Image 1 (cartoon, rainbow, N blue to C red):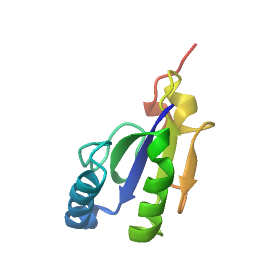
Image 2: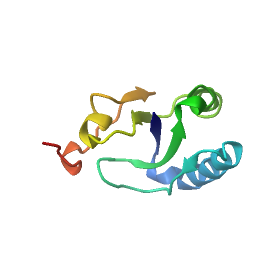
Image 3: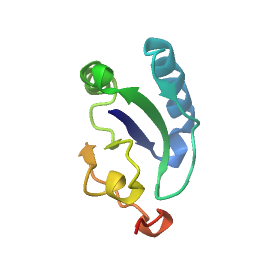
Image 4: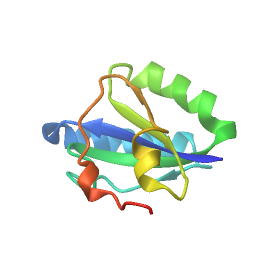
Length: 108
């Protein structure tokens, strides 16, 4: 199963976020590092996401612990039910942040 990790930043941390994003992409070229967004979809805070395979999970979590230990990170599986992925199937590292759940598609 593949996963997304959404790594959150304060708006004023954009320069740090972009530098960290570039370094993460260089250190984990097998992942897909997304664009930096101030707000998008259910995410109420600036963030970027990284898509990764289960085989990379332990190394990525250790990297996050070493470089951004107090950062809010939402981790969820890539599954068809996007609402469940961001809620019941998700887990957080660091402080939990509010999500705009109304922005997520509902599955029947």
